[in-house]
Image (cartoon, rainbow, N blue to C red):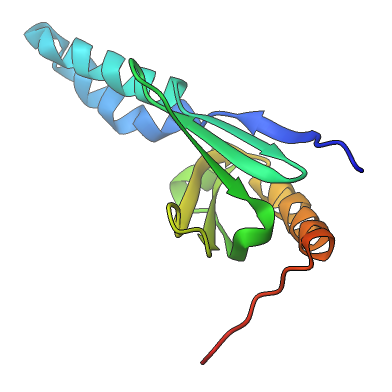
Length: 140
């Protein structure tokens, strides 16, 4: 039996908070924006993505954490998005549509090398579907 290996792990980029950081920097004399900026930074910093050859594990939360596992064979569709702002920083989003009850739609936001990762995940989805003998049936 094949051993599960990590393909990629990381967090969303802090580029997502750039607008908030700029506004907080301009209004830092009010003191409260500093705490807002710290909270936003922690929110991104404490979001962890781990993509293995069998599943995607998403851990979120600052004080209390929640970990959600998504089996790769449950992914029905993947879309690679690279909005202009993220493209400036060579980042992108992976949008996953799944058959998982708890996570029907999943967005891996602002991740580096997202196009290559998209191709890697696609390859392992097919491997897992063959291994589990799972197929997607569309009733349209």
